[in-house]
Image (cartoon, one colour):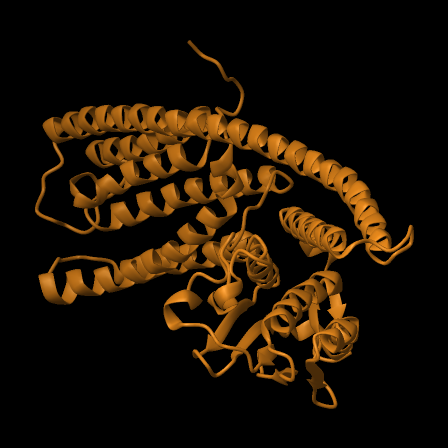
Length: 455
């Protein structure tokens, strides 16, 4: 039973119509060259008599000439989905190009043997192209036009109305005319029906996939919205409880016994870990939005690094760790989201401060590597074994340099995975270079965009 009308479910494939027309335009240039080379080969190698090379060259030039117009028209759509905005114009170009191809094919066929030419099969090729590119109705119409061109040529040669060219030694008689008209009529009909049927099934499946994709996208939007609401509602009370516990531990309501203070401090530490988890989940939720590209703007990398280091100076001082920035006088700008880049650096710095022993040094460096800006956080902590480095940037993976503290104050392993996601969102990469006992260098490389070489 028919479930669709009109343009026969021109769905996802229609969004690629410009790309396909661009591909066929390039192939058409090859066909024009093939006509010229084929004519020369047939004349001077095969020895086909009475072959009009000048006329063949004219057909090839005409084919290349109108194909230049088609090529220039569809080239802007050759590398991406064209959407629905230019759909009508592209469909018109497809119709016109196939009709012109039929004219050139008929003329070239007349020059190389007409009814007896073995190149008659190219009519079937264009029938297939029409079925793939256009609606079912248009495919039937263009297939009929192609068959009428062939039939007109065959009947014209048989009746003597059209003179014969390119003698291939095949006599055009009544039997040949009837055979060609019947066989190619049948082949054209069967080819068009089968191809349009297959294409129709593909388009119906495309529609189902699009509908499923839209449903999944709506569910993803609902999930993101729900996650934002839950995270917001959780962060506020958890933050309040942390502040109350810190006040309690600090003697705001009177001094606590040592055992009581120890319990309160452990509870505070657990809640702080929960706050870190909530913050990480919020960043992951932000990274899933499709609006990231629209939020990107030129970023002063040097200023962003300086601000991130200043935010962590107090934490480093409490840990008795030296934190310093070693930056060049100028760095090229990148196009990105400053808040996310600072989040990535904050994860690097938090880990470095946590695992660098007292008296150690953490250095933040940056360098212009031409196409990318590389930012490094270098510590002189215990280092990480090579077999563990490959898993560090996966979700819920923890650094091996935690050593004996694993499970005591370790987080849930979202920090470095967030850094990786942030780097990928900026079309960059993140990684680590480390050896046990020799410290670690965590880095993020962010590409320099041509539009933002300087700030």
